[in-house]
Amino acid sequence: MANAATTTAAHAPAQAGREFSGKGVKLAVLKPAERISLRAPVPSIAPLSKALGLILPKTPKTSVSKDGRTALWLGPDEWLVIDDAGGDLLAACAGVKQLHSAVGVSHRNVGISVTGPSAAACINAGCPQDLSLAAFPVGACSRTILGKVEIALLRTAEDAFRVECWRSFSDYVFAFLSQAATDAAA
View 1 (cartoon, helix red, strand yellow):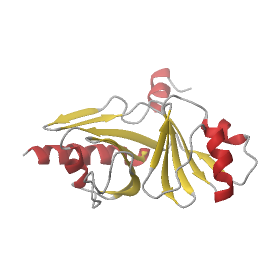
View 2 (cartoon, rainbow, N blue to C red):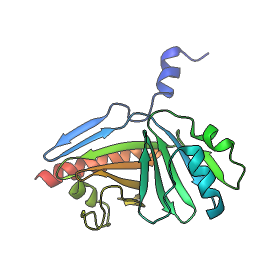
View 3 (cartoon, rainbow, N blue to C red):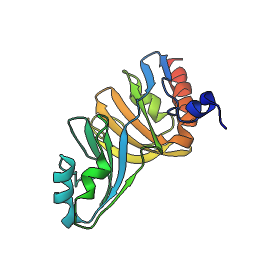
View 4 (cartoon, helix red, strand yellow):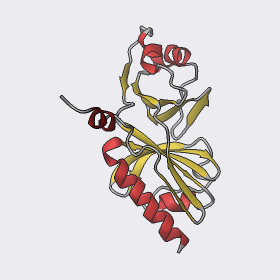
């Protein structure tokens, strides 16, 4: 029989409570959120949007947020939907009869907040994407790379980003960003 301490630790959110502050950059692991990977053809977008309570974006590099729920456009028929308020995204999609695939990925992803005047420079230490406000304005998102891993990147404010990565890479991503923040301050 497993002891309670081992069982509880095994179910703790990855990187929970982890933070780092450097000159001009603050990193923080975000609280657990509900997430789905959503795939759907054009005729299914309107009913899914209604069910989710926000209009799924159809334009590359865009996102839509409403009431703690955010949909990131990742491809012509693909979105990452995040609900920070704890809503049941799978249940919301379950009643939609039109063709779609909604897969729960809450357990798979970890969100990391990167904020401060040097946030873009910190991320650019490992991401080749142009993160200037002109090229990547507030609300812009993309699937890209950071160092050696794939991430979903969302600009939440002029000096703030949300980095979504797979749980198994979260230690690497946090350590990479921490080192980049340290290097940027030097």
